[in-house]
Amino acid sequence: MLALERRNRILEKLQEEKRVVVSELSQLYDVSEETIRRDLEKLEKDGLATKSYGGAVINENINIDMPFNVRKNRNVVGKQKIAEIVASMVQDGEHIFLDASTTAVFVAKAIKSRERMTVITNSIEIIIELSDVSDWNIISTGGSLKEGYLALVGPKTEAAISSYYVDKAIVSCKALDTEKGIMDSVELFSAAKQAMLNSSRQRILAVDSSKFDTTAFSKLADIRMVDTVVTDAKPSQHWLDYFEECGVKCYYP
Image 1 (cartoon, rainbow, N blue to C red):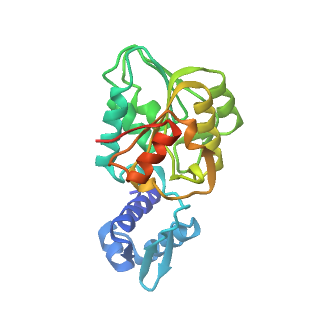
Image 2: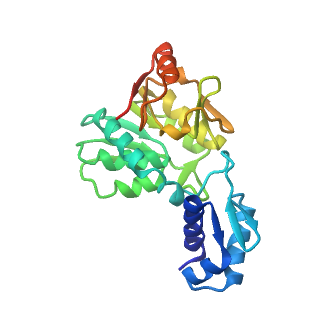
C-alpha cells in the first residue's frame, strides 16, 4: 500500500472515530509504529489531525478540507439524493457546467442516462467518470492541478469557463449563511465557481444539509445569485422563508 493511500485510510478512520491509536494502526496496515508516526506527523503538518499521546485526533476546523478521496465518502446517501433531484432537472442535449466538488461527481453518475450532453468541468474525477459515455462532448477547462483535490484551478481555468455560455451551472459549496452567502474554503475554487455561475442561464446550488448555517474562508456569491438550491433534507422554516424572500427555489427529498 502506498503511503498516500494509507494516510487517506487513516483520515477516513479519523472521520469516523475522531481518534486513532498508533499501535492499532500499525497492526491494521502491517507497518511499523514508526511509519505510522510519520504518517500522523504528515497529517498534522497538513492541518488535518493533531497528534496526541499514542495516536492522533481529527482536526474539526471547518476551514480545513479533507483530501478529495476522503470527502467523497462522506454522506454518500445524502449526495445520491441530491444527485437524483438535480438529474431530474437536466434534459437531453443540454450544455452544463459541473464543478470539482464531490457532490458534482454524484450528479455526473446520475445523468449518465441522458443523451447528447455537453459537460464542461474542472474536475478530473468527473472527466474519468464520464469517459465511457458515448455521444457526449466532455470539455476540460484546463488549468493548474490543485494538490489533493483532483481539481483544475487558476486564471486559465476561469478564462476557459468564461468563454462558454451554458444551459445550467451545477456547483456545490463549503458553507451557506444567510448573512455571508455562499462560501468555500479555497479562494481558487470560489473563483472557478463564480465564473460558472456568471456564464449560465440557470444556476443550481447542490449542497448537503450539513453546510447550512456555517461559514468558510472565501465568499463565492450571494444566495440571490442562484436560481435553485437542492439539498438532502428539508431546511428549517427560517431557511425556507429566506429562500422565498430571495426568489430561490428549494428542492429536497
